Amino acid sequence: MQSDASPVTGAGSPGRGRQEPDGGRGDGADGGLPRRLLRNETLLVLALSLGASGVSALISFIGSLTKPGGLKDQAAMMNSSQAPGRPWLDLTWQLFGIATALVPVALVAHLLLRERAGGLRAVGLDRRRPGFDLSRGVCVAAVIGGSGLLLYLGARAAGFNLTVVPEALPGVWWKVPVLVASAVQNAVVEEVIVVGYLLRRLGQLGWTPVAALAASAVLRGSYHLYQGIGGLVGNMVMGVIFVLLYRRWGRVGPLVAAHALIDTVAFVGYAVLAGKVGWLPTA
Image (tube, rainbow, N blue to C red; front, top):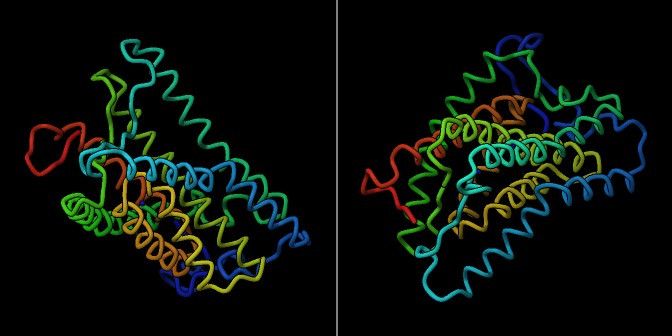
């Protein structure tokens, strides 16, 4: 389950609510950098982050398709133990994984600062409008989260999806905090790179708004393909919605809030409900 280009409208008065970052329209300043450099930079950022995840997900999905048995009889594991039976070492690995996953976001912030765009503020990830970001995020999460769950259950029942296991951590004191941190990390990485950064760069490279939207949505769907066709399609639809919302609001902040809430409910909800309710598939 990102945001990108120029806002069409904002909340409140034009001076207070309208946010129109240059990268939103794709016609903003690029610091005078040549297009070849911007193209290579974008490819490298993706190769170090979600582009590589997309290739990995494709390989994983091919493996699932060629494995005996149906997709729904196989499991897609998330947030699993890295050192079973050794909780402190496991915690260390969990925190290390979360921290290193955020490095590409730090790289994006650096690249945006290089072009004097104001770092992550250029894509609307800052503390200027916390109330706006959180309120919109809650509303988006409520709509996307519920429909996404129904799509997953339907796709799995039809045999198009693996059984997704959102968490398989031991029952230790740090379990819920790590799951929440993992949800926030996912949200920040995906929305900053797939929406804010990618759409800004594609606009600067001359892509049309429709082509940039399609690229962002396909990328988002690609790295969820390890879950199955449902994961691919559902996240592509989510990608289209998130891009349109970003273009309206000019901020990834609400999208980060929504994504973090969706993943937190999925991770923690599974930990609480797995094996206790009949409608929730388990491995």
